[in-house]
Length: 107
Image (cartoon, rainbow, N blue to C red):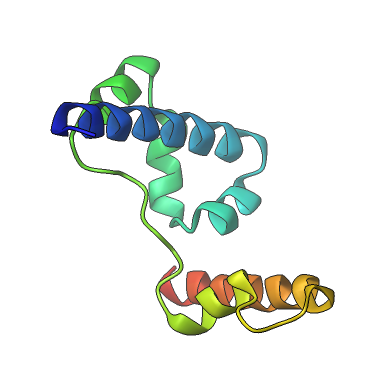
């Protein structure tokens, strides 16, 4: 994959993310804050963006969304490394609780 392809994919991901974020914010703001891991202020801005503004923002070469999983414990829970399939639901729930707690701390 060359640089131009990577930049094109970043732009597509940005536009998809902005459209998803705006849709979630407009349909259920509280759930959007949790699922997207964003602040109230960011939700206010995203909720009011026009299609032209979203296209302009998405066209940058920097990915707008970030990876919320940033430690070994959460990665281990999500991938079930070393665990049986029976514990899959419990592991995912535990990972979601950890990430939700981090969202509350950041907000």
